Length: 584
Image 1: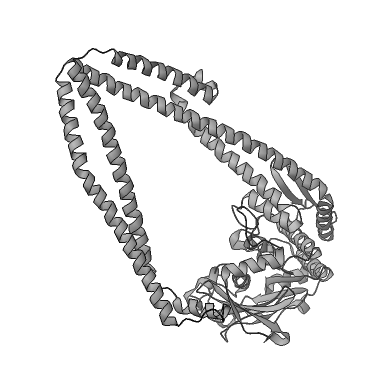
Image 2 (image 1 turned 90 degrees about the horizontal axis):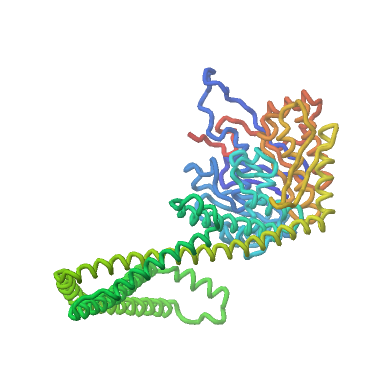
């Protein structure tokens, strides 16, 4: 549950929340049309309704969005009071920096303890563990707190009102299904493994296609056989051509002196390659040590004061040396490390320089032998044949490398396909074993939708070779806003399931954008159902609305919601907005 949203500026409109339905209302006082005279320009963030949701996200480890990125708020510090782990806490955070301040609160928002500072990452971990039982060491592809909390505070900017199961545009099925498995009480680890295997198989198939595309120049008939067989046949043909040419060279008749020169040339070529390889290794060593040296230079002045103070707090009986001794010791370590790196750089450069005469001598002798061989008639033909042999050997090596890669990919594809089939069976088995959970989710969705419409809607939860699918639907209606009402029913279903398992933040926030396409009668019914259902499951339901929208709901629905409206009422004039200042 949320209790209070405030800031360190008097102009900010502090909001104090309560149980059940909370309506945050904004009056539209400035004319919407440019043709109408306006006392001043419309503020950039209007009355600040969306900024309230942005602030909740920001204080729950999110990024600064919308108006919160404005330079006008650079020095502001915001605070949110909330329940966490059976305690009431107040979290404070400013626009700059990645740290938050946490303190316990008692009744009347009075601080019970000294504040504790946390990194935003640590705050994220704590929230995820407290509200969604997430592990500290998050695995790749596992559910994240920021993704989960978005189901309880959707934002239009993110595309949260486009689809019931999706809270962000371009959100992948893997992310959606893993997160919803956590919220619905299904096995999220199986879902994660399923999508990892599915994605891995897709990447392998892409690599296999790239290999097959290399065969585009092959005859049409050969392209229809499997890649390994085609490559094996090509290797056989290329090897035959190489061996035939090798026999020609071995039987080639040249004077003994040219044969000796040819053998010496082969030895020189090998020696040249060895020297080149050694130079490459030493140059890489020089580059690596220079980068390490630059890193050491940048780290010459670490936060020793802070480190010393923190260590003294954590280990008061251990840290006894004086600060000056620690500084001298640290500087000595850096100087020793730099001396070692400089020595290694100098040694590598010296070795490169020492090999230079050898490289030059090898190159001079190679040119001499090549010139002598090319002046010898038959020997020139021998060199040509050897060049051709080298090309054919390269073709064979390339084909063998492609064959090995094809076999490796095929083995990976077989293993991954088997893993995908196993996780698919596990996914279906988990869905069957947890049928009671799926049944309760579907029944809850149907109950809420039945309050809205004459017929109950349906929430289908299926597990198949495509993954874990959540498909909500409500009865077809001629009225607008069917998608909005699907989101309404789906969000309350998620909140209800979490509340029944002691999970979730205890609140649900909807922006006015959810109700814009809904007719007034349906709008009023949804607000009333939200108020009643929130009371039934002990949920805090927060809605931001424009005053004319609420008037429309009350007049067309014949209901009165004034008792749910919080003070103060915002307006779109600068001093009446959430921040109480003008944004140009």
